Image (cartoon, rainbow, N blue to C red):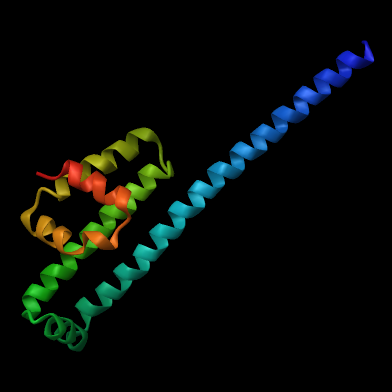
Length: 142
């Protein structure tokens, strides 16, 4: 085999390997960002659950907002549902699951936001979520 042909083949193989490595790095970065955002919202959900479980915290939450404990509980539960929808969105957007499962997640998200209580809470807190998620939900909402 001619040495220039061998050099060309070797160069093509090296470029292919480098492109493959770059692609893996890009996928890893996207996945890392999605996992980070999911963890942030998991932490928030844990805090909300602790508030639901602790009467003193729940009363403080309600008092701070000038609402009843029952209303506070409803707001917290709606927020947890919205956080879950956001996590599903990040899973779908980050392609952390197959396309079929991801699309089912998105159908569930759309169904969730048809509930009046979720819609009301969403309008109160949507500015706390990334703009692309806001746009996605607002395009799905009635």
